[in-house]
Amino acid sequence: MTKKNIHSLKLSPAAVLVPLIFTSFSSLAAGSYFDARNDAMGGTGVASSNYTTAPLTNPALLTKGRAEDNVSVILPSVGVQISDKDKMVDKIDDVTDTVDRYQNVFDDFDAGDLLTDPAGALDVINNVRSASGDLANQLRDLRGNKADGSAGAAIVVAVPNETLPFAFVAKAYGTVHLHTDVAQSDIDYLDAVANGTRFPQAGDQYLLRSSATGVAAIVADYGIAVAHEFKIGEQAVSVGITPKLQQTRLYNYRASVYNFDKDKVTDSEYRTNDTGFNLDAGLSTDVGENWTFGLSAQNLISRDIETKEVNGYRDTYQIRPLVTAGAAWHTEKLTASLDVDATRTKRFKSQADSQYAGVGVEYRVLDWLQLRGGYHADMKSNDVNVVSAGFGISPFNNRVHLDLAGSVGEDDTWGAMAQLGFSF
Image 1 (cartoon, rainbow, N blue to C red):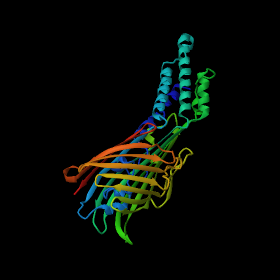
Image 2 (cartoon, one colour):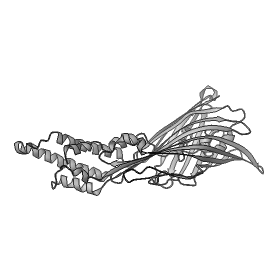
Image 3 (cartoon, one colour):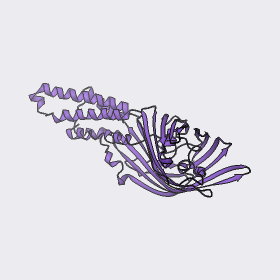
Image 4 (cartoon, rainbow, N blue to C red):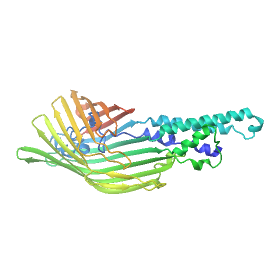
């Protein structure tokens, strides 16, 4: 392997995986939104959301707004949750350090040293063998590793009234899936260098076949949610719908693991654009003074969107209906909630499906202070389970609403969510 070839190893997957992992988020929100109050309560909200956040969870809950309530604005709601299940970041850092060792060795190497300084040349050979063995072991450890994440942000303007409450909603949801495909032949080659049966030389770069792939999707929804309460016998039932324009951008970048370039992941040459129509819907009803039950369905129109084919690889992003049932028990001081997905959450076909359940509680300590906690789990065991907590404050006679939440879970998972709202 020549000095030039070794230098190319410095552009390892660490260059892209580190920034992507640390700006990507595991799916605390099972759907396509983040809401600091709901996320603090275990990702629930189908029956426990207020009328302001109803367009994000269940549009039928818009009827929870009273005639005397004011126009309410969320500006904005954002969330971030980081999960490094396989400790891939640390492993990629180790690979980069090893590649740097290769580079430093060859920077100081001169073929003439074999005659003029045999001892120095032997040191170079030993360093190359040592670095090669380390890199082979690190590739073994990276084999089969994956990194998945998602992020969301939303803006809502909710207008309550007794006849037809409505809301304008804009939300963006992003997901990323990264994986490495480590070739056994690469490990065999590096092992051969490590045990002294082979020495790197020109052309060896063509023997290295390990690759890295990054696929990402950004889905933006722009819609108007409306709701109305109907009487079925003596039972009041609210129905809500959100027709929306849905814009999707997909990215697919695949390259050698040794020169994977982070700046190319979102290049336009790897992007596919798609625009279509979709629909969210929901139901809710109150039973007695303390119970609310809800049912929501997001993305009722299914779509499969293919990425571009890059270096022989193509993936498909799946938009599918996500149906969730929820129940909430509430008093003046306390709210307890439960949400269970009836369908699976799908993303790229290369990712495993998930199906979530969450429980949460909110205690109103004061009129302007609320404390929250919850637990969120993937019933398919393909995503991390997290414990969440947070609080809300609403000073100035409830004119300003600030909600903050945090989460922590298995597989080195942590997160933070924030939401700022105003009532006029």
